[in-house]
Image (cartoon, rainbow, N blue to C red; front, side):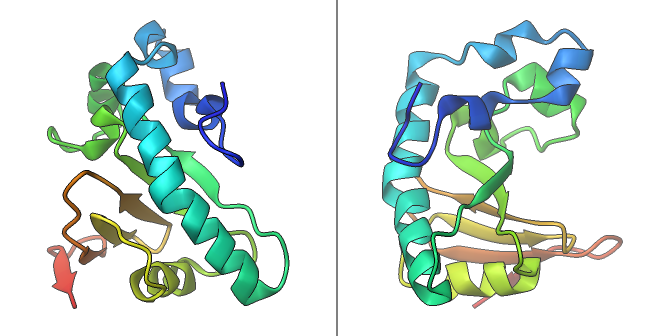
Length: 150
C-alpha cells in the first residue's frame, strides 16, 4: 500500500523481531496508524527527501530502520512506553552515504517542520510528525542522560 509517492506501508511495518516472536498484529496496523503514517510521509518524509536530493544533486532515498511498532513489538524492542512509533507518528532513519550526525543536522536546519528530531547513539535519526509540532531536538549517547539541543 502506497502512503506517498516514495514510501510504502511495508517499509514501516517490517520487523524481524515481530516475525521471530510471532507478533502478528504488527503487520496489520489500525486505520488511525495508517492515517498518521500517511501524514508523516506527506508532511515530513517527502519534503525531507526533496530537500536532501536537491542538496546532494541526485535522487536520495531516506532509509527507514524502524517505523510503526504495535505495543507488543515496542515492548519487545525496549521502546519507551509513550513512543510515537506506536501511533505511526515516528520513524528511525538514515541516508546512505551520509553520517547520522550530518543527517541529524540537516533535518534540524532544513526548514521542514517536525515534532522531534533525535540523534540516537550515532546509529539513526528518529524523526516525528504530529498535528502539533514542537521542533524539539535531542541527542542520546549511550551511558549518558539525553540532552536537549537548540
